[in-house]
Length: 384
Image 1 (cartoon, rainbow, N blue to C red):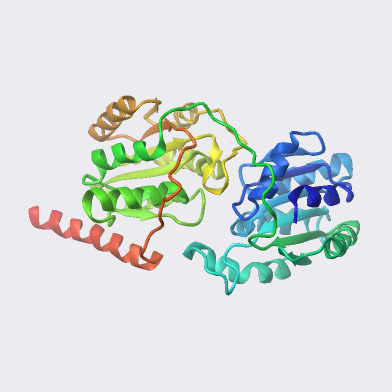
Image 2 (cartoon, rainbow, N blue to C red):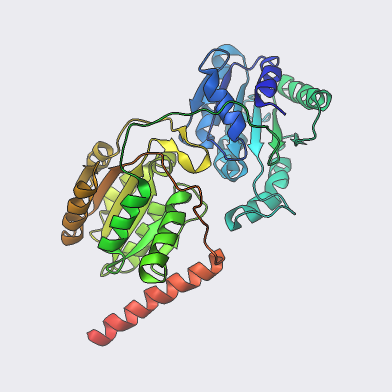
């Protein structure tokens, strides 16, 4: 199915606004929306999926037009509160159309963070009283018409409707390509970071390619990755996991390696961290202005930096680095000082096509991380 054809049919429903968070399963769809460039649809990449529900509510109140919200099924968790307490028919009754990329579909091999979410995707929609239909590469134009007719009826009744999209549903068309203008390559940044901090700190890394690159580089340099907790799911929560570690043992140095899209998704964490001000916490934000791991779509905050926000929240130090030398200097200063610090590194959209994935399951990596944490506690106790 051509994503452009799908969008033409969606427009017949009266939809003129599209909002959401990019997904790799929906990559051709996201490309088509970005390439539209505002001609047929207003497009917003929101901070998270729940925010898209809020935006759709405001649009409907003002224009009496439903919005299309796109997301990966992992984002259903962010949708639940505003969907249940605002949009549901028993509250305000705000019609909207969801287009959901189905990761972790039962019977389809996928990454560990998607397995359980994939299993409960349809059940979650049923609990939330959202009728849905599943489409795939075999769905005909006539069948799509029936699906969207059901969506039209649901929205006319002030309800929501979901179209669940299987992998491979949308065929590749013209690809949306852009550049953020930065030259530093993320993998180069992570190599510098590992050399400077891996043996002195415990690392919590965010979901996506950042964790995959750290995994490969640590194994290449040190033969293990036991001091890294890879947050393979739960986008936007790595910093609070790292904060939990920092609070549990103030003698250990904790480094959180975050992505700009992940920080944006739950930016309130910056204020909480600043209020608590853990002196053993270093926050690295890798900023490429995009949701790069799922197709390089610009974030809703693309082109901006987080250092001024961190300072305004109360971080002791927030430094911007655009070169390898600037990063090395910032890391040396941050590891010497005992204060809550942020280093934001501006990087390009480049990544290796042959980038691998962790060979161990998530549970194995958890056990190895906890063992490394405990062994350092024992060693420190013996030294005392």
